[in-house]
Image (cartoon, rainbow, N blue to C red; front, side, top):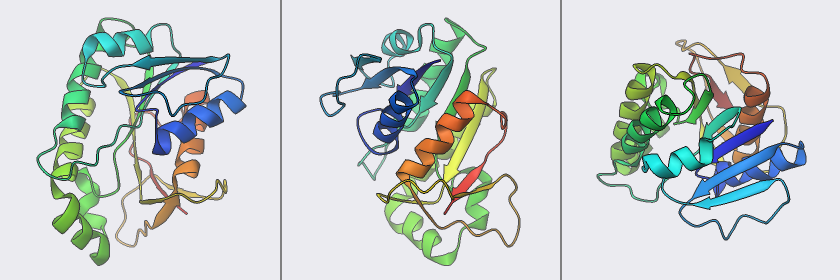
Amino acid sequence: MKIAIIGASAGIGLAAVNQALERGHQVSALSRNTESIPDHKFLTKINGSATSVSDLKKVIQDVDSILVTIGTKDKKNTTLFSETARALIEAIRETNPDIPVLIITGFGAGESKNYLNLFMKLVIRFFLKDQYVDKTLMEQMITQSNLKWEIIRPGMLTDGKRTNRYQIKTKLERDIKIGKIARADVADFLLNQAENPGLLYQFPALTS
């Protein structure tokens, strides 16, 4: 299958690129700078912005699934996530509204903020508040659209190796525990869902 990865040059996105190619998929990768992505015969690299409708239309053309793994180091006043959502909704509407879209936000966005442990509540409150406000806005925009969406909320991300032994939580419950998870495992989950999208219109949370 052909997979578009938006935000492909680092973190979960780069791990997803590498794993998708290992699985034999064709990959269309979008990032502001694609130099960090190794060349491959099944890989098309596109330098561009996730907030640009025209750039998004280039990367999602004729794909079977879209993975959105954008991130930013800007901790204050970021609008990257909501601007990406706005552009993505328009780009998909003008190309193929039936493409499944798998979007990474984070545990702590939307209703999941009410289920954070004390440590993560403090981390988000003092360091990542603006990011999570904008991630929540992204979730709202996507879920109110006509897209075939799935929003994935991983716990605290690490650079650990892929284990394939992570937990998938599909319900927010009082005793839910979402801790650390390797970016490589999040990428594995994304690709599993791209191949078999069994959790559409849900908010799976991931933890090791």
